[in-house]
Amino acid sequence: MDPWEGTLLVIATIGAVAAAIGGWSQDRRSSTARLAAMERKLDLVMDHLGIAAPVDPDVLRHLENGRTIEAVRAYRRQTGTSLVEAKQAVDRIAAHLPVER
Image 1 (cartoon, one colour):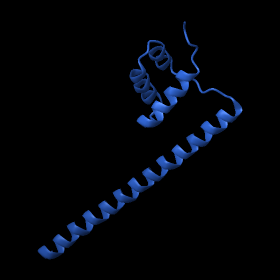
Image 2 (cartoon, one colour):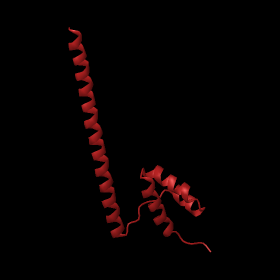
Image 3 (cartoon, one colour):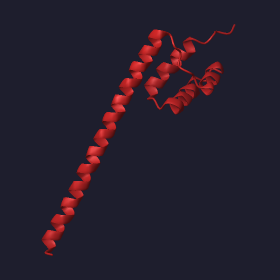
Image 4 (tube, one colour):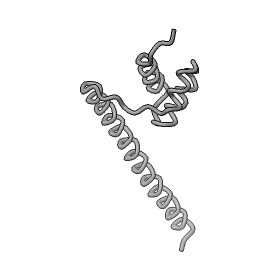
């Protein structure tokens, strides 16, 4: 085999692997986006029907102790949502907690 042929074979192999990885990562991003859209729709349906999603006891405990940041962290661990989505969800949960006097 000529050295140029070997070089071209290596370059072609690297290109094929890169293309396969690119396709896989695009599929993964697409699946993630579709899953997020489905979760948002399900949340809207549950809100419309008045169905409360189960809340992690750690989130409630942190909120009851006034530790909002820890509650957001616990919510993110439980759900895998972004920081903004977790903060909004924790704020909604906190709004429905009884106020102690």
